[in-house]
Image 1 (cartoon, rainbow, N blue to C red):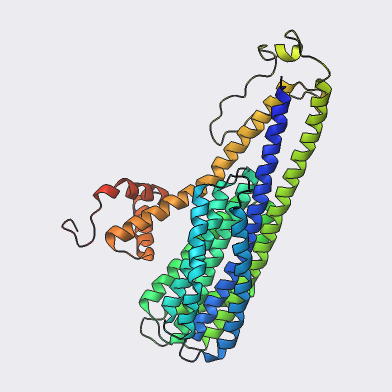
Image 2 (image 1 turned 180 degrees about the vertical axis):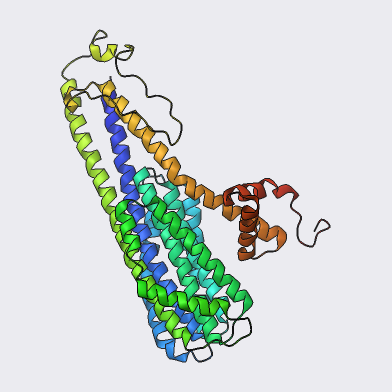
Length: 436
């Protein structure tokens, strides 16, 4: 008959397998972050190239494209490793759907580059193309964070995803500002878009800091140089407050690009530090799990030499009110009392070990609920925005602005407004229909 300790050891092996998969996911996130950073720079250079006198950046643009092609190959290799038949199942269908969408975008990237090189597209079209592709790549990171089974790893992935999303919005701001300054004329629509990007960017960085551990928080706060931010704020005011139709100094375009690039390069360094922290965390947790397995295996080997009697105290503890009991039912987010001290590991009963493991798993589940709440909130808000865009023919900025204004006027959270929008989906009229 197989002893209960055998299943505890098996559970630890499953935990190690999960952590191994998380390490693989961390490497995927790192490769994605490197390619996204490269594409963000390629997007910015494309905007400069598509300006009236942009031929001078053609060589740097072509060099950046070649750089991105090499990173793209690395990412495709990572994607292929996720889908190998020998890999341990665990990634959900949503993750593989996201990967399929990202691969489709990568396949179409050559067409985007051809249209930029031949100047078939103007800067807004090119920017929209890069934004769509990068959003697909970041969606893979989002699903990876949502599927993480360890709370510490999950929180760090949530931190990393929101930081990467904030950095992407910084890249969009770089592209928009470069193009607007290069055009030499203020535009009301572009200025409104710029203000929306600044607001969304701040929210992403706020969420990333809320979930960051002290080390990660220190990394994130170290990336902004005061003098660079001051210069960026000055050019933001110039670009966003100049009356529509008035002249903008085209000389601001390369300076704006330089400042934002400096900031984004510093952010990339922070990304690397966060990924390194993530990998170190996974390895430390695997090492702890391996040590537990070694200790429990020794205990299992010792117990094989004896036969457990129905009158043995270890068995009697199961029904003894004074012995270890099943862990209490716990509401998400509430603390769990730690197990009583039983002495060295080899002096514990199997039931003690099961009890402690149950308490640890319950605490982990509560932490996971907290980390995933942020991701679920984002999903609800994005779905509500999409619904408003479809039914009211609004832009993404317009849908977000409508929801934000409604939340402010009603004194509610954005999540509450989003849930209300989704609950009314069946009665929302299409723009131009009889009910419009």
